[in-house]
Amino acid sequence: MNTKQKGPEDLLKQSFQSGMIGIIFALVPLVIKALFNPDMPYMGLFTGVGIGLQLLGLSLAVLVLRRKKISDPQKDKAKKMTLILAVSLLFFMLA
Image 1 (cartoon, rainbow, N blue to C red):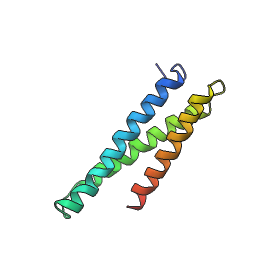
Image 2 (cartoon, helix red, strand yellow):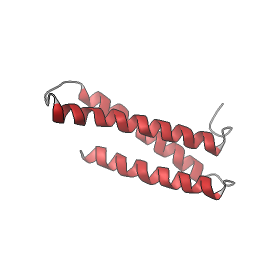
Image 3 (cartoon, rainbow, N blue to C red):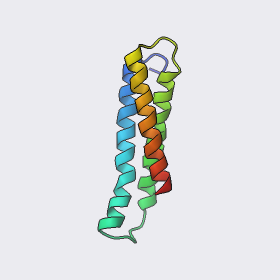
Image 4 (cartoon, rainbow, N blue to C red):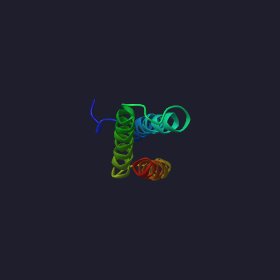
C-alpha cells in the first residue's frame, strides 16, 4: 500500500512515530556524551539515523498538508507536527 492509498490519520500516525523515534535516536549521543564518555566512537551513526527519521516524519506531515480534501483538525495536527519536527531537526543539526 503506497502513501496515496493511506488516509491522513495513518500518515500522521506514521509521521509521529518516525519523528519520535528519530528524536530519541538523535538524543542518545548527546546524553552519552554529556554523562558517560565524550570519546565514544560510532555515535554519529545514531545521529544520522535520528535525523533521517525526523526528515521522514517531516515529509509525511507535509504530504498530509498538501492533500486537497482533509478536515481542519487533521490540517492543524499536520501543521503542529511540521513545526515540532522542523524545530527538533534544527536543534539536532546545530548541536
